[in-house]
Image (cartoon, rainbow, N blue to C red; front, side, top):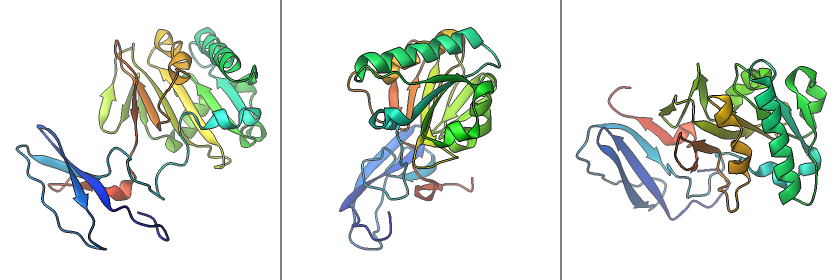
Length: 235
């Protein structure tokens, strides 16, 4: 998992089936290692290191919290295509949460209609809103480890469509990959507002994706590189 790096001595291999996951720790014996995993269910995929426990040169560079190390080069951008007042309120809540918890520093806020590419190239970009409300989320959603649908989103083969659900996801800033692009989006206005508190919660996981299901607790996800996912059964 990465040329020029020392391979891990062991790695988890997960078989996804119609009856749940079966995971086994495989000891690596060299360039090629044979192993067996038994399952009661019909297998659909095999994923190496599904939960991101091993070092990986082709894994994600940025997490949802990467910007905290570089607040001088961070910009918050809220969407104006829909739910404008809610998105602006969520942006201001995020700005205040950062100020209170991180050295009294106030991150600037702009509307998506007022931001230029030159602004985006300079640092981390925190986007508030879905693709249908924030033009930058629509423009850059290909850089994110999630897929937005009409009033729903998918991540790691899990779909969420309840208006009370929300997601925070990080990828590379497409205009300057040194920095991150982070999206905070609820499937309705009321589920967008709490996301700043979720993101900056004490001891929050530095994951690529934080899913906040309706009525549930936030859960962090590591998205496996495509090279480590193998379809089973001709899919």
